[in-house]
Length: 295
Length: 225
Ligand SMILES: Nc1ncnc2c1ncn2[C@@H]1O[C@H](COP(=O)(O)OP(=O)(O)O)[C@@H](O)[C@H]1O
Ligand SMILES: [Mg+2]
Image (cartoon, rainbow over all chains, first blue to last red; front, top):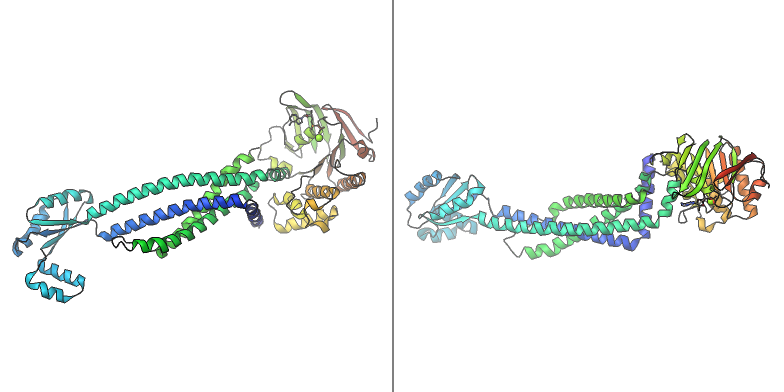
């Protein structure tokens, strides 16, 4: 009961402060929102890259195609040679015939199978699962060196490219976010300082009538919290528009990249943004007014 | 209750605002503290409200020792007293009601308790009808009564007023003094600091005369010299 009365009062005070210093506060909200927007954009991009990596295939699978001259029997026997190698967990033989069936099924027509059955262009292949991903490059190199093998297809290489891309993206994202967060902190802090300064007379009166520092802090914390929450909401809407209407149509042109749909993560973003926004606003205002209360 | 023993205050190491002051004010008393400008009256008030700490001596107010008082205890000391200033110290953008309510709101009181107490003190100072106004819309005398209402709202044991009538005409001054007398009769200790001898002479009360940081006279009755 007691607490609730105060919270209502603080909310009123915080909102009043907010109105009184519209311009400064709006600047703070914009800056913080920009910060959140950049974080969100990078998180989404990284999520998309991760999804792409997953979709590119089982990361530890290698497909090898045997030379044309290898006949059916030795092709089947080749599995034992493979199993004897290091770092190979399992091998699955896909004969030329099965390969053609898969191929034509993927393209959606038995006619393809029928027309190529007599002159099958597909090679014998093995789907190999490695036991240790870290050694996959060595395994690929060893396979490449074998004369019976015509081609080695390892999705790991594509994956590696994406991984590198993701790391660079994350690095840029983190660096940008740190810079923006610092700028935002300065702006939010200045806003709170300004409103605190404008009300130092009021603070003195509050102290005179027996207000604790905690009480005085209350209204200012609420103000910081409001700035944080508004920024979060604003950034959220912007991110949605940016991602859904600009980024996705653009990206879906590049068929290689899979994208995470915003609708599947919107709640995570909303909650994350609101919580982060409020905490950020509270922390900044807490440290800003700490100085003012020491008198 | 106020108990000062050998209290001195020196500003910046050489400005002696108070020199070994001994002063006891019992609960329920009405005391004037008078003296010329620069005598140390406001410094005395600041010591009582724990705004400044004595450089020497011991001081106790309403059970709180003012020497070495922890910052976290100061709010609680201040809630045992109400302070009224010459310049009223009201928040202009808040209503009369909110100005008075502030003093009780800071104690964490609920809204119902706040409303009851604020309504009751506004009635005492005769400003119930102006509760929704803001200080700049009021006359000086009315603003001073708002400040007095704020000082009263926590039902403090002690009310201290520093030059409360300095900005008021003689008629408002009399009115304000009548109000303090009424408050005192309800059991509250009242300390009025002033340099206006006429205010003091109208009332037969204890008068403490301060000059150059020393108490030169402490007796009941008007001040005539
Ligand atoms: N914060 C301060 N710093 C330095 N000197 C001060 C301060 N406050 C008061 N003084 C000096 O202390 C003396 C007493 O001042 P004050 O207590 O305000 O007297 P009064 O209220 O009786 O006019 C004066 O000489 C004044 O200049
Ligand atoms: Mg003075």
